[in-house]
Length: 96
Length: 320
Ligand SMILES: [Fe+2]
Ligand SMILES: [Fe+2]
Image 1 (spheres, rainbow over the protein chains, first blue to last red):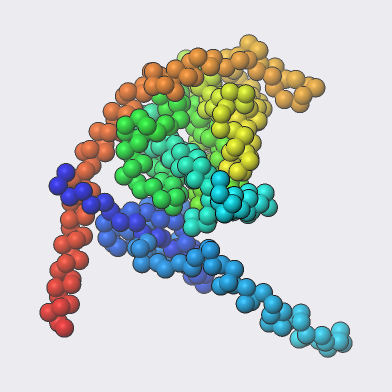
Image 2: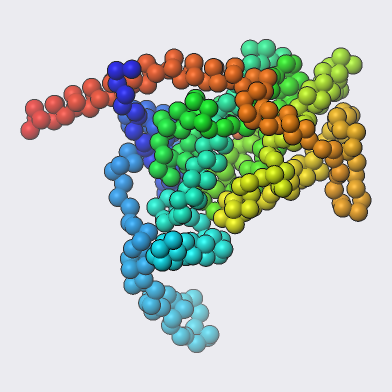
């Protein structure tokens, strides 16, 4: 029991097939990146759920704070003109 | 409670009532966090300890087909344990603490795994009944209010249905076999039926956590509701096998639209929960042994990773 240091936590992102983005699948512990990829394969792709894996140590992720979610996101709330339905065109105009 | 805490608590409950999911960094009452850590870790431990009674039969599986299926099932259970430990860790407890709580007996796991697996038919009964009961509970939990727990449950439920089917197929084969094989299947059902009903936990009147867990939408059905659902689904499956459910009080109640069934032996239930089941000690010994014997591997892997990292940094420094 000399080295009491535990394996760090990694976040796992899986691309389920080419053409789709990587998506967060979950987390796991591993000693290094290589082992994290191997463990991710065993834990998250046992039924061919992936064609590509990204892993990143959890401590390197910077997340927005839920307490500031409102001030962070509400600038988008009053900008209806960013949506196509804001613009009035007559029905006769097609393919637009 | 100070007014600020009270306002936060009210906001929290309003989010729950609106069926919003709670995510790791969101504010949550301490008791909600504690309840989740207890329940998710207990669930994770059950997946892990649950591998032991099945591991007992891997080398004695009657064919290669049965053996690969059983191995794949057991490997899935290890995965389930990992998803759940991961979900628990998002609440601010670490893996080492979770395992410590299991090994010291502070944390519980499902009592069903304290019963011995005595015959090959038990691999059938465990898949059919034990995984079947777990599925009832887990399908409900895909809608639980804590996001990471709900997501783990979705993955788990996708994987579980093969577990139950492979178990039922084992029993079906035995029941279509010789008289002795059918007898073995019946004996297995006789031993696993009642402990499987106990998996849903104490009755609603005796359950101390149910109401709060329902209010927080951690649970969405009570123990007794799930138990009834399990009995209703499972009895026709036993009939199809031609096996007799070991309960003289079991009968279809036309008026209720459900099966009536006999009283669970709650003394046995609490006795096993308190650690006096047939295999409690054995299971914990096996877990602790595996954990301790794996310590050098974990340490060596960490030391190797650190050494490699250091070397890489030295190389970078030399180039610079
Ligand atoms: Fe499982
Ligand atoms: Fe299972």
